Image (cartoon, rainbow, N blue to C red; front, side, top):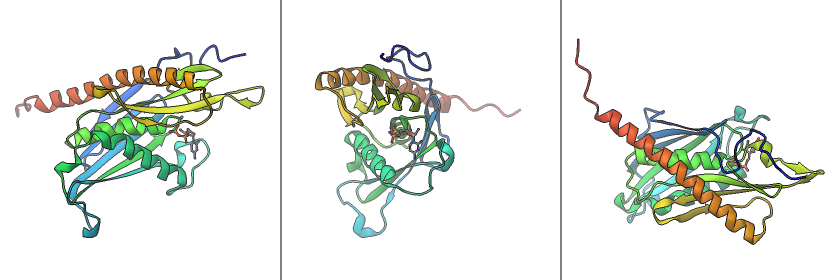
Length: 244
Ligand code: CDP
């Protein structure tokens, strides 16, 4: 037995419905919501502003402080509020996935706070978080050399699946867990991989195919992200309505 048909009927190389909303947090300098189906992430950027306390300042570039968290009721079994080992790890990998394209040297001694909140989780939350964060950073006007896109790739019962759900992450055959989750992120312009994690086991030749499939999906996600930014620009450029 293998995983022949996806639980939700999607093609193996298809993401769930991608939904993007820009400017969801008016008080932030930049913000965005990104969803993969039932996985929904919000990212907000505050700054750049002068870093306090002073001894934490870097005179050569801004410091990016990244924080990822999930709402307690975003998951089926209530999550204890507050930071955890998992949230610290994810904050760290998200920061590493984004920094290669950020021109932080434009803001010496400054800090940029990036807050990512998962409001509903059905796997792939770090990838949704990265996609929301890239958009929020662009919305905040932080200069970037590229727009990062991320997707989870699963090796589920020996089938490569794009954008896996929690049900797929928990896939088993004869009581044996047969799902490997491989989140990837790309900077498309130079086709640079900025995130690669692996939860499970995979053969080297399969890993190559996984990265290729992830790359293709990220290119499509990137188009959706760029469209959301273009639409926003068009909106702000519209002439104001005349007073009646
Ligand atoms: O979300 P992501 O795939 O980036 O990270 P994960 O640690 O592999 O978590 C996979 C999924 O497990 C999450 O997206 C949630 O749906 C679920 N989860 C949960 O139900 N309760 C938690 N405390 C953590 C994760």
